[in-house]
Length: 178
Image 1: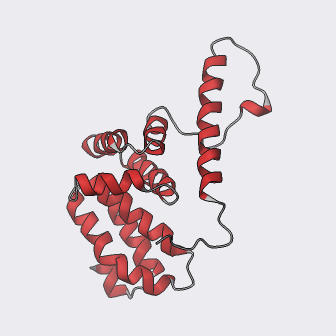
Image 2: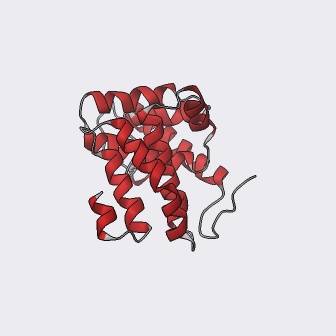
């Protein structure tokens, strides 16, 4: 059953098309950049995916989770926490409208800390704007904390998601301490 979308969110297909257009513009801009010339307004993209994230998002659009799995595993192995946080956020945002690739990833590797991280971030994002946010986030906190524990103590990124979930759920100070 499809979950209802809030009125302030665009159609999923519009979001996917906008993201794919951004990827194509980025690739075209790179190809044109080989010859020096001044930038035009049409070539400027704010928050464009980087060379590592773009292929993972394009693969996800095709239902493939492998590039995202390798990307996040690499950031975890290399302790690239800022990149890991940003990539997990962007992948979760994409999965909000196109989650087939994430569903396959989780079915294939149910204990994968990276799949659990994206799924936890997705759950928090989906519930954040709901009028029932407090109750919904209270329900997902155990799975978000499990994702953080699976990633291990060295990885702070899932714990940021757990803190976001606790904050949105209106958790008491003792809950934050735990």
